[in-house]
Amino acid sequence: MNTLVAQERKDFKKGSLRKLKNNGEIPAVVYGREINTKSISIKNADLLKVIKAIGRNGIISLNLDGKSTSVILRDYQNKAITKEVVHVDFLQVNQHTEIDTKVNVILKGTSNGEKAGGIVKQFLHELNITAKANDIPDNIEIDITDFEIGRTVRVGDLKKDYSNFTINNENDETIIMIDYAKTTEEEEDISAVEV
Image 1 (cartoon, rainbow, N blue to C red):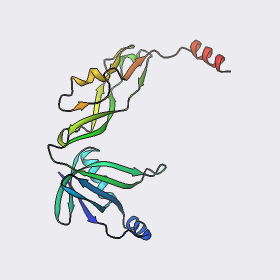
Image 2 (cartoon, rainbow, N blue to C red):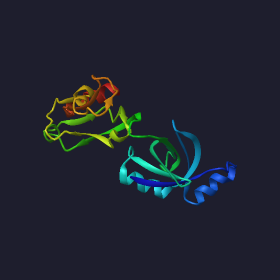
Image 3 (cartoon, rainbow, N blue to C red):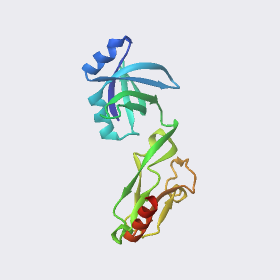
Image 4 (spheres, helix red, strand yellow):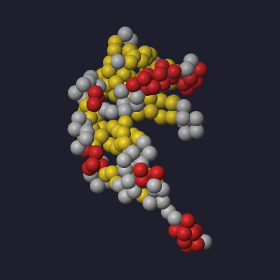
C-alpha cells in the first residue's frame, strides 16, 4: 500500500495557505466513521506520485502523527486553467466500506467501423458505481476493436461483466455507438439549413 505523510493543520490564518503553497504543500481534510474530521496538509509532489502509482481510486495509507489510516481520495479541487490541485478530501475506509464513486470509461482499440469510415460517439465518459474500497477499479475499459458500424454498448451490456461492484446508471443509457460518418452531401444540406 502506498503511504502519504500528513501533518495536522492548526494555523488557519490567511497567510498560512500561502506558506503551505510556498513549502510545496496543499491543505486537505480526512474524515470517516472511525475518525474525527481533521484538517491536514500534504506534500503536493507526494500526492501526485501516489496517484500515479495506484490510480485515482486506490487505497492510500495516510500517516498522521505516527498512526496509519487507510483512505481513498474522495474529492479534490483544482484551478480551472492550470489544473493545479488546491485542496483534497480523504475518506477513511476499511475493506468492508462500500463507497459511491465515479469511474472513467476508457475505449481501447480502433473499431472495424472506424476503419470502414464510421465514427465513434461516446455518450458516457464515466459511470456511477457502488463498491467496496478494495474493488473500486481505476477505470472501466471497453475494447471496441471488433465493433462494426451500428454497434451500440449500453450500461446493461456491461453489468454482467462486473459482478464485484454495482453500476448505478440505468441499463438503457448508451455509453458508445459506432455510427455512420456524415456524407459531404449531408453536411452541405445541414449548412444550407443553418444559413
